[in-house]
Length: 139
Image 1: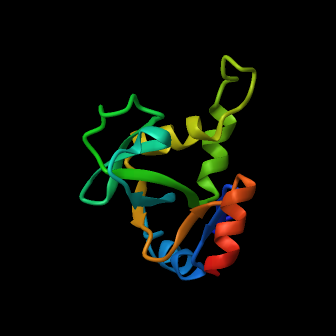
Image 2 (image 1 turned 45 degrees about the horizontal axis):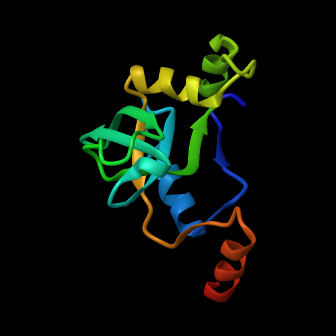
């Protein structure tokens, strides 16, 4: 891919395409990933994203309810440079026997190469039939 970038989104996430362009604009020199986040009262059902001045400092998957000191929740959308593939090549198999993208993202976070983008448009998880129906009524 060279210096190209690509969009990675979980298949059951619906969001505004304008946010994709805004995420691409944040891929400045020294940044290899942009993580979309959304503000929630408590990110316990997703991934709590901690940041300092827009740079991600850590991500905690499914923290216990009421324990997070951040309101940023991972929105399941990333903009990556090809450097993520170098990190993926270093990832060992997880205890579940899988190569996990989150491990590569954690490596980029540890290097200070991931920034956030707070979604400005709609966001909806459409992983259940009732969610899909609600999304169709909105869009």
